[in-house]
Length: 112
Image 1 (cartoon, rainbow, N blue to C red):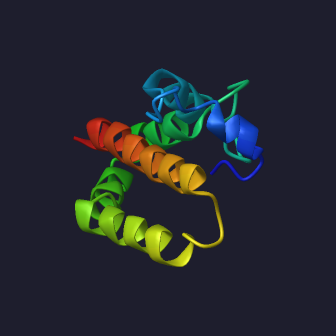
Image 2 (cartoon, rainbow, N blue to C red; image 1 turned 135 degrees about the vertical axis):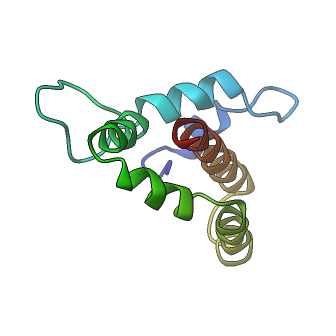
């Protein structure tokens, strides 16, 4: 997440008061695309890919529900805060966490 963005591009996700621009983040989340695709689809984002997989195979919905739980999300956030805090800028870390939470919420809405 955001590995290919410069610090100035990371800054552009924040307003002058230091708050994340949710619309800009949502655009990032919905425009990010996986390295794999779907037959007969020109472009597909990560969210659409998971949604298509669930439509094709209902068992995947159960797998997603098991993976997408708040305890796992909190564990990942804790790891980012503990292990990456000294390696990346605070804004990048905050943006990564906000992105994970947004993806988590979108995917939970799809599977529920």
